[in-house]
Image (tube, rainbow, N blue to C red):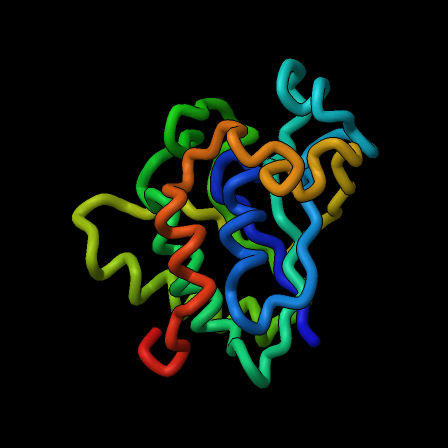
Length: 170
């Protein structure tokens, strides 16, 4: 098993989408790489904590190699948007890839370089070592499972379609 931390705007939709990818074993939403210790959602949303809404992803890399996981993640973000995804705006909604080992970091940088070739603008996706991750409150965990009509900037078609993705074609 391997773990990576992905920030792609509001973590509710990112978590739901990522959890549906074959090979993903566990997801958890929280806050990464900010300035404060163990922030609450309210602090991250309304105070300048510097944290990004982030999903901790545990995956089986024998089923889902990290490059394919990242390519699937890129399908649901606007990689050139600064501090915004969908209708969500603010520094906590920035995009990022946070890793805990250098090999995953190397793969992430390679995949970002490939992605950048498709854009005329610079990418706005952070890519750096995870400094810290704090789990969000329980009511945010699996939020869209608990609230199926809740807000989501990730298209529901993408969330549902990724369940059946052919990983050999990613």
